[in-house]
Length: 468
Image (cartoon, rainbow, N blue to C red; front, side, top):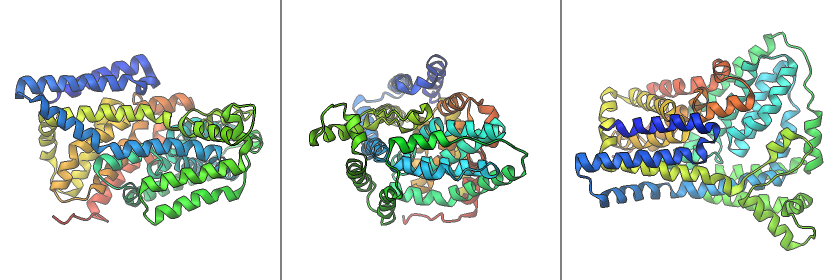
C-alpha cells in the first residue's frame, strides 16, 4: 500500500514528460505531486484512520522547515541578475575563455564551465550558454560530440555542486538541516578528488587525440567588450564574497551583502546598461532605481549582437526562482502526507534491512537517490525524497546531517543528467544537440561521484558521530 503513492507519482510524471517535455517543471510536476499527496491521504484515511489535523500539522511543519531555503533561493535569483549586469560574471567569462587552446580544450572547457557554474550557481544556464559556444569551438577543433558534451557537463555540475548560489546545493543543505557553507565545505572531500580525476582523463585525451582546426571566439569576446565594461577590478566582488564565506558568515547575510555590492558596482561601472534595462528615455536616480529593481526581481534581456551571448547574459531575477519554490512546497506536501500516514516509515523499514554500517547507509542513500531520479525524473524531487526518507535514520545512528546532505548531492544532483527521461537529461541533450547516451560515457565526474561517496564512507575519512 505504501508504494501506491509513488507508483501514481511515477505514472503522472512519465505522462507529463511525454506531453510537456522540458516544460514539465513549469507546473505539471507540481500538480502531479499534489495528486500523489491526495492518494497518500486517501490511503492513510481508509487504512489507518488518519486524523486530518495531524496531516495539516505534518505538512505545515515540512513546509516551514524549508522557509530558509525559499528565502535563499529568492536572494540567489537577485544575485544572479545583479552580478551579470554589474559585469562580474562577464568579466570572469571574458578572461576565462581566452585560455582555450586545441591541445587542452577538453580540460579547459571543464574548468571554464566549472568557474561559470560556480559563479552563477546554475549548471543548466552554464550548459545552455557557454556550453553551446564550447560545442561549436570543440567541433571546429575536431573533437567528437560525446567528448565535448562530457567535458562541459562535468565542469557545469562540479560548479553547481559547490556554488552557494545553486538551488540544488541550497535545497540539499536545507532539507537535511545542514548550514549551507558547512555542506559545501564537507562536499570538498568527495567532489574535488573526483573532479581532479576527471580533469586528468580529459587532459590525457586532449593531448593524445589527433585533432585539427581553430575555434573562432573573437566575436564572442568582442560582444562582451562591446556590452560590458570588462575589468579585473570587478573580480573584487567575488573575492570579498569569498572572504565572507571563509569567515563563516550566515549564508543569507553573505548573499544579501553580495547583492548590495553588485548593485553599487552596476550603478558606478555599468550606468548605460542599467539605463537601458529601465526602459526609460530620461536619466536620473529614479530611472537607475527602476533599472536595478528590474534586475533584482524580473527578467533581463541584453542585446550583445550575438545570439549565444544574449542567452548567457539573460537573467530572470527572483521571479525565475518561483517554479523551484513552487516545486519545493508541493514536494514537502507530498513528504508530509507520506510521513503523517506512516507510509514513508514503512518504506524505510524495507530499505534499512540492508543497512549494517556507514558504507551500507551511504550506499542505500545513493541507491535511493538514483532510484528517485529514474522514477520521478527530477533531481529536486530526488533530493527532497531521499533526505526525507533518511533524515531520521542518520540522526538515530548518530551521524551528522552533513553526511546526508553530501551523499544526496553526490548521487541525486549529478546523476540526473545521465538519465534520458530526467528533466536534466532532456534539457542538456536538447540544448547541446547530443543524445544522453552519447555523452554519458564521457561524464566522468557524474559517473564517479556516487562511487567516491561510498568509498569515502567506507574508509571513514572525515566522518564523525554526533554527541548523543
